[in-house]
Length: 509
View 1 (cartoon, rainbow, N blue to C red):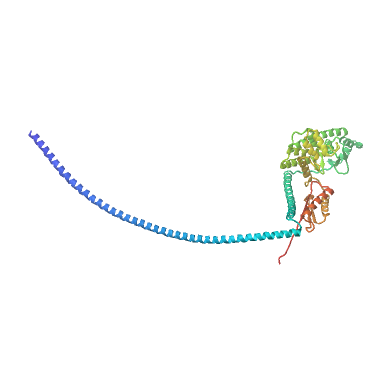
View 2 (view 1 turned 60 degrees about the vertical axis):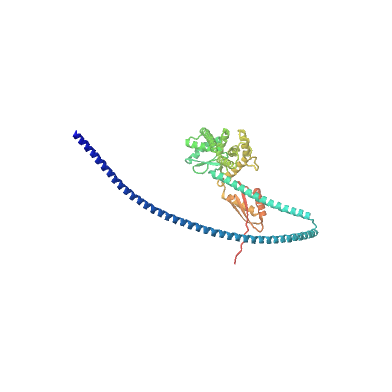
């Protein structure tokens, strides 16, 4: 019991001591914290005072700057206003001076108008007097004079119109000639073919001269059999190792040449064998004719042609005109006519077929009477060729053509025949033709020099400018052309150019 009491008392004493210690401890801590807080507060207050002073100073500086800027701006504005006031004042003074000047000018203009009215009145009066005097001198009234003046003006206008019409006509002709030359040149440029020259005779080579005796045969029976079977003349002369076949029919000449070649190769020469070889040669020539006709049709792109026409085309392979192969010439004319038609906007098919068949009559000229153009047109019409085509065939040598395609076929024919190298022409004949052209031109008065150029396709005439004027030069060109057409024979066409040149020379000294 005592122990418990002592324990309780000890606990109470301990609690009391703890409570007193805590109280006094908290008081000490609180006092120390308060001291620290006061110190911090005084420090914050000091900083706040410094910050306040600094901000106040900054505010005063900013205010001073703003005030200075505002005062400067105010001074600038006052200066600008004063300057504007001075400018306005100067403008007012200028306006006043201008107004005074305008008033003076108006007064001067008014005076001039009054003076002008007086002058006009005087002029009208003077004009009336002059008109009366002119009417009295000329014996014409004013209306008559106006009519006369109008007639003269009309005459001058008509002359000017005629001159301009002539100039425009010449210009249009020149442009048309240039375009035509371009078309023809393009067509020729796109087509060029070699031309082979050949005569009415053919030469067959022999292995030796002994073969000549075998060809003649006993008492000439072999040569008579050959000539009878082929219809040619066999010429056996002193020419070494060769015999000549002469015949105007190129197909028979070709058959005879081929038959002789076969006989020489075979070596057995007698009348029966000759007949067999001639038949064989005729068959081979017929096959060649058909193949050549088909080749011509294929090269020109013509379709649907009658087989008989194809055979006639093939026969042209053995026909020549002035040394020019007619089949090759026909193919060339077909191409040229087609190209020209394409450039001119004409019917290309009609032009090509007409060009291919334009000389088809020459395959029958030995068998049918008439010109090759008429024969060709009849044959074409017979085998179903349409009218525009057979008319082009019939008209390709006429001066007047009924269609554009006929004209193009004729032009292509002339181009093919007249281009250099197409036909054989001796140098002597060529020189004579050039001399004849120059002689025709030189026969006219006022000509200084004449030159035949372009292989006789063009004649350039230099005239004396003091004798021949521009109008006479045009007339001279027409007269020369007419005389060439009347007196000379030539292929294609000939261009006549008259040149009139005036040179004025002075020397500065």
